Length: 508
Ligand SMILES: [Zn+2]
Image (cartoon, rainbow, N blue to C red; front, side, top):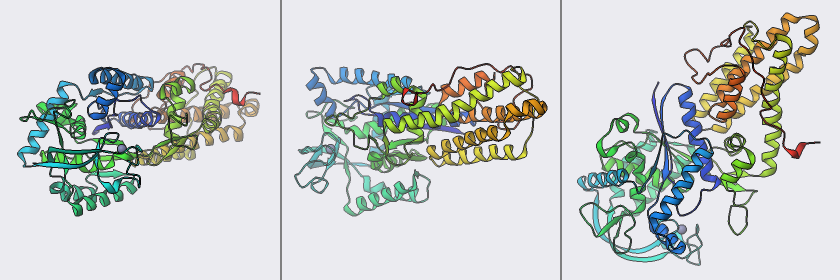
């Protein structure tokens, strides 16, 4: 048993959540639930990032204060965590005092290590990115490639963080996998960025004059400066645990794993560990990086009208089917597509046919051939081995942040169980060898019990429904539930409604 701490990035609250962040939430939730299943002590954090210039601009356009905007949109993100059935233990918003005090403590700790110097920033800033940019980052037209808008020109006094002073240590941590970056391809990408930053000696401006930007965390001991939004936002991963007072929670769970999108890798595997080293704190144990979600093969954009609202998607498709799609169809570490046609195909093929049909057939046969009771324990070496191997692969894939491969293995086991029924033909067997039918049924019920545990991290409601039908609550894999034969003879098996009613697309 270990301590396991997982965080999502904290999304920026100047807009509503999109499906890409819904995927990040669901990935983090899947990891949190999996680690609870194997008996770890888990803490799962998400929240919102409310500071920065973009917030000020958006609030102004809407005729409200930045705080009103932050509160309103934070509430929406909070609703999304429950709307997707996420099991987060905390939700931090960076306007909270606990966060501000923690961020200021970190600032002072970095300053105590001589991690800052004062200088003048004379350059460009993209408000959309909330990042300092240089000419060579821009398109030939002089626009930010992410936002297609020209950056602002800034000339102001700032505190600079001595990023390059700490980079050799960060590099070593990443090279040795002491700061593990998954998938592996992102590790190479990050090391390249580090080499470049060291070569170009790029330190980072870490504050803005308060007269230009006051919506943020004040730099301690210098009222004329506000922290750069990323400098305050990154600290949320520890301020939420009570870094401010060195709380038990902090000591217990940090260092943890930061799960993020690929566009903010530099901040999380570069700036963040450098800040922690400067402040004499441990760097994150790992950074897990996911790709983007496109919509019907295209980048989501308002003008294309293909933006997927995660609330609508959960309402229309169902929470578990949506979670399934995001975890099964989008490769964990790479870009993936959200397509309605593909959703329907997976829903009907995998959820309704493979999983739903198996459960319904086996439960119905149990009513018919075993009076609705679990038959005596029946062994079968091959099947037991198959189940155990599915568990092994499942665990290995999740540890490697390959959530897609893990769930695919579960569905292979389901396909096997369906084939086993076709091959054994219990309905024919019932006439000639009634004792054999009971053995076949037991094995099938036991496979379903194992699958219900494998589904807990992915589709918790479905897993609970299946366990409800089996009259069990197997939420911990160890010490016993991973074994074969844990369904007790004579247990009443309940009837269930179809787990996944077919969608109209395939109705006759
Ligand atoms: Zn930009």
